Length: 424
Image (cartoon, rainbow, N blue to C red; front, side, top):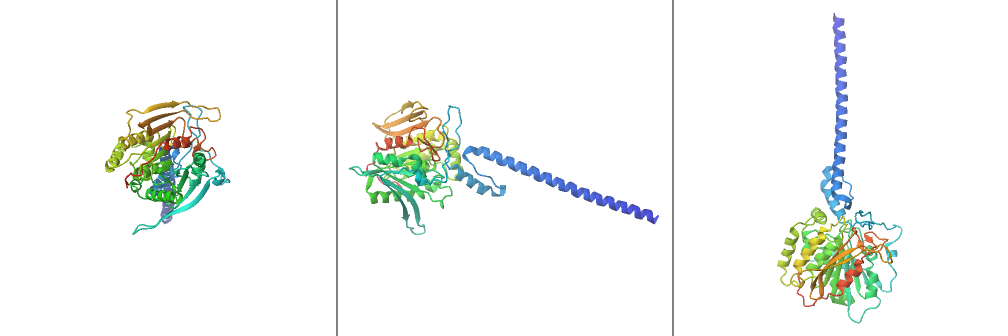
């Protein structure tokens, strides 16, 4: 009987151990399945978030606990211009930007011109608790300066660009040599922003602080040092550079006689990288009019700001809705000077052959007497790229119309009276 009991106890012990082993195996298998499902759900969530950002954002998402850092990276990436090759049909989507060879220095892409191409630094000493600031810039001075003082065009590059990149892609130096004006290229520091983006979306920047204040002081110094025309200074930019150019022009009309904005985001409706991205993709609904009206109401002696707006119809980074909102904003700003109740509309057909192929485009011009005050230019099939630029450069497409020439033709008809009061 004792033997039978021992045998039964042994069997029960074996069964108990087997049950324990089976339980552990099932638990391990269950945990593995949970991890697999969790990873699949996380991957699916990441894929969905990426789809919301479309092709304008190429940032790998990290673990959920790093969401804040991921959002900052996403916002920085969205400010990076992404060029698009022209499509062959009206429905064809834009494609990826041309990539220049990394083995060829950017300086080699710049043509040899008889004028002076100088690299320099502008420094602003600190005051009180404010730190000192330093920014690099390039300056092109034409070889033959006309009898009168030389005009100045300030060029603000986009994200993922340097000053030399922007000079090469826009070919502004070549036009400056022919027309006799100087070109200033401020360059955002990689220390200030990893992708060299201007922080146009920050509230402090929109109020005229930060980079806006620094570049305004740079312009004043360069104009005085090289005896440039203070009444004929203009600013132009692409994407994030265009966003900053709009703020610089509106906050410093005593410096700037006119502005050229290529693929620019709406003014004054953002206060963070994420809201800046939303504005680039969706505009700002009714808030764009409120933002510019608040600005106009705060500037009792604002002299108006002539502006040319250029936008690609197929731009996936800064959507064309921004063009409509900017047009409405500058219509409010320039309302006291615009004499034409309705804009003059013009349409230009595209051409795919010949020496100068171009996309079709339309313009709407508001006049102050005979002088154009607001020019809106919408280009068919153009993505996020400088129209009529250098083919070998990123964020630039050789098909016209030539945005560089279009801007200069507009600038050359604008001049600022030097008695304009300072607006800060």
